[in-house]
Image (tube, rainbow, N blue to C red; front, side, top):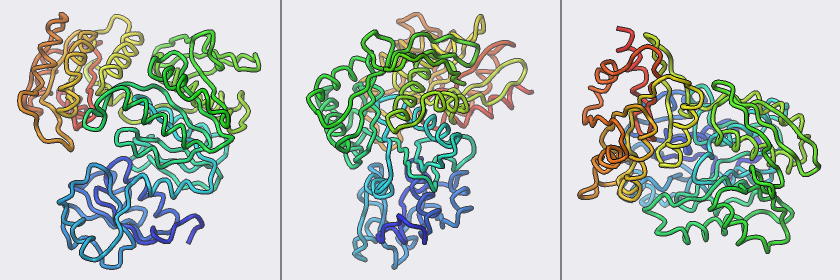
Length: 465
């Protein structure tokens, strides 16, 4: 059995093993020698990738899926209390472990980087994983999305660095004690768990308080929420605080971002005064900022800036982050995970900057009733940046419906902002709708955190006909 495997994790059972965060931890444990099993509501490419690593994956949730000799049951905050496998665990006296505790255990004894923020976590964590791997450091990593193939969201490396996406949505990032922490931004989101920006700030302050003494906080200089956090934690003298951004006060200052189609060249000035220019292989200002945050974090671990800058150029994107799905009949289809108004605006501005005179058509699926209730109007305003949009019904994920909260909130706000919006209640009809709208040279974005991503191949197939 490989070193670094806690005894309680020798025979873990994961409920919801196909989820982005859960599957990554399961994969690392399997690579470390654990006998891993779990269940998920449906079969998927992720489940099949786990089976290739020797993981037992049951489809559906049933008490009989839980082996009597399981050493623990791993859950995320999305798992409901009435899950039959949880009930069976209680009957057998098997301990229940939250996903964040399992991940924290995997990070023990390694030099860790934890990436937090309302937006950009997956991209920045991926940039670090790819660049550190390109440098031959063989890091371990756990990311909230696949780099290229299904199951590529995690890896057990033989090196001494662990890079992890740190989820603030349920405060689970309070479990980590990283040597380097990144805070990309802080905005009000996850309304089921946070009632105000004050609660958000307090949660991020707790996260900063977990940084190991002698460690480093890398934090955005030009984003209002991050700047407020910097002000609040500036009295902590046992860590170094490194800011990055385009302002003159930034420690790592972005001097220039030069768009080049679907890539950008980024020039930064380091605290030493040395300047570096490197390529980011995804478009948009926000992705350039993510890359600079990754650069600053790697330097905080003692890596040579010029080597890391060169390695960051090896990053070519992560699934669902402006991922080109294909082209048919002169129409490109791109997939975007954006589901918060800030993310939607950033991705649409990035595509607008790269698209030239091409029309941008969006298929948007709102994610969560609570988010739509709080931010639906802003989502609609963001869609005004597209030439035309198709808006689907709300993807509920883990939530029950909220009376009166529908996609109409977004549609009304979009139309008030002058947007061309078509409501569509049937996912099956979307491909025909887009085929009737799209012309050669157009760009189609499937946008949202739900299953709207499945429509990309369907739209391409319809366009080919």
